[in-house]
Length: 426
Image (cartoon, rainbow, N blue to C red; front, side):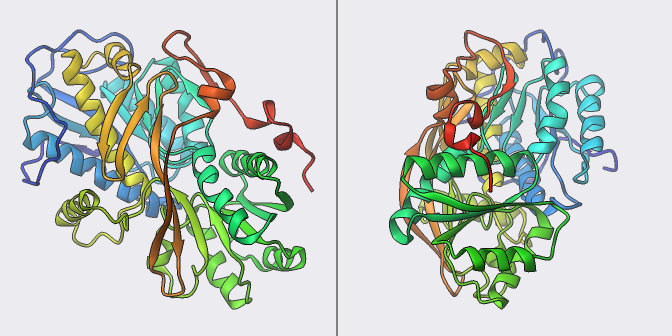
């Protein structure tokens, strides 16, 4: 429908485990609006399907609708069918703010999934907090958000970079050059590169921050060649930055590249001709190529619903499992009362996700993920090199956050805790 709302789906797809039978009780909501005595549960799904982040946001939207279809086919939540408020934010942060207010104040959504970029998250989070709205942010990100109303489902920079950087240092050497998107995600992630380099006796010998509008990388490639690092950390995002990979190949920049974003999100290894992505190593919780039967079952169901979809990306599965997790929490408390569901989630929860068996760390509203090093070869085939289960550690261990006991709406940054992140940049 043109207003972005969709009613309960009648399409039939295989359902996953972990969904319990609907209960009859629906509580009276406090804070953030909600369904109350309505006959349906309303979920807000604000994901980019046009604009600079459409390649990333469209799979997030698709997976959300797959999860909702499966839940509706299995009886909905608490015996109620799920409807959605799901207009396209068009990769526009002002539109995100408008739609977030509409979702909360007019549509009275029971829970909200919204946004790809960290800049989007920070544009709407004050609105989320002011209205005490339950919010799921599903993109992998720089880390550090300790917010009583926000649950961060994607892997953090410390989880992702902490997976791939030690591997690259062991394999290729200790001199690192960083190129990163020029906004809060890229800047804070680059600080994490410095922290992890320091922890592993490596050196960041160069660093560049590149605006999202940039699509020509000649000077950056020259700078990397002049610096002659052992490997490059590429923290690039969005459609424009994709042009870097063909340009570096044309320039003969044949170095190993590490990343926490490329391929798993924008599936450049599928969109670009080989060998553009040769020698790119990603630290991710998910790629479509995860070689397990459980993942293949999920991928098959996704393509059954979306036969023309180009790829199942990392954030896609984060939307999927978090909607199922929300449903499980609502069933557990017998209500869509947001305060009760937040309290239930803060107890922690085991989750059977396409990536593997993972868990919600209730005290910090983040996930312990099944992290992997993925390597792209010259034919753009993907190989899993290492795999470890890694919890969120910065908020839980370094900062000591406990959202069960203390309400917060803050983002902590590594520069406040690690000397290496606060060093003067070259």
